Image (spheres, one colour):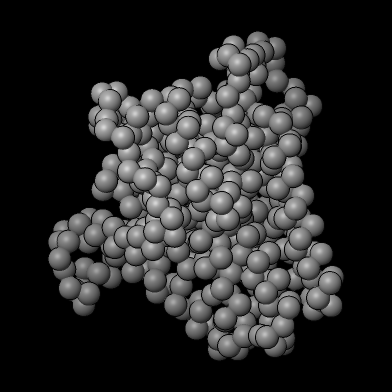
Amino acid sequence: MVENPASEAALLADLVPAPDSPLTAAGVLRIWTPHLAALLLPAAAFAFLLTAPHAWPVGLALVAIPGVAMQLLDRFGGRQLHAPRPDLPAWPFDALLFALVAIQFANIALLVWTFAALPFWSADTLFAVLIVGASSGYSAIVVAHELIHRPDRRLQLLGRALLVTVLYEHFYTEHVRGHHVRVGTPEDPATARFGESFGRFYLRTVPAQFASAWRLETKRLGDESMPLLDRRQLRNRVLHGVVAGASLSLAIYAFAGGTALAVFALQAVFATRALEVVNYFEHWGLARQGKRVRPVDSWDTHSRFTYYALTGLTRHADHHAYASRPYQQLRVHLEAPVLPRGYIAMFPLVLGRNREFQRLMTEELRRRRLGPFAEPAHEAPAAVQS
């Protein structure tokens, strides 16, 4: 059920303020170490690829064990609401991001190398798509999301390069200049509407996000209606991303063959579908009131494991308030609606039991008087879609 403590005081007791005492190296290490959970799935994918090919029971175990472990840790791993220390040094947390970047590039290279010599129709193909696709959702998309919000253009470029490995580079343009401006409004293709099933959201959001990114770029270049062959399109960042993704795909086909290309493309689809699951529940049913984005316009979760495994992504309300704030400095907003599960445990709920997902989310919206239940009172919302 939706997290609903007996009183707000129960939550406030968990919001531990930063002490006045100086932060020691041991203190930094104690705070930083749990964030190594972000390496779990990318490292599992690396180990899978390094030991391929497998007999199917071995391959299944290598995929299932980390998947089940993460579900259990997310469901039963407790809460994390501690306030960050403002005096934390940035470098160890940035180093973790760079490690994830390196693992992502290594995993893609290993994937291509491995499947250059393996048949497409094998159990290992399915397992590789699942574990590398899930890993790319971590070490490509989540890390890219962090980097593209940094003010350093070199880090933004690194984030864009990560997005090319999942053939979704337009996310850089649409997310930063589109979603963060229009979140919670009908104009935002990445905000799921109240009563909208994931299937309908996915079919709507994927083409709409690309179209939005393209419009944002052509508008930046001076003419939303400019033809594709206009010389100004040479500076179109979305077009750069398309060309980069196509070039990478052609290079994989030329040097490793059709099987490697197919597995690469499928892991990209898996990873980006995972991204859209997250987009779906991060703002589902919320409608922004006024021009200013508020903490109540995003769903948070207090899952300890998700917080560490996804480098602070769970504190989404604070991220929308302060988009360039590093992940280790994100804060909890008690006024934000709370998801019924951690991010990882939300996946089976969204994909397998969507009616239950909508029921739980609706209960939280009603309790907090948000979305269709916000003041002034609205008419009864439409029935849940199947």
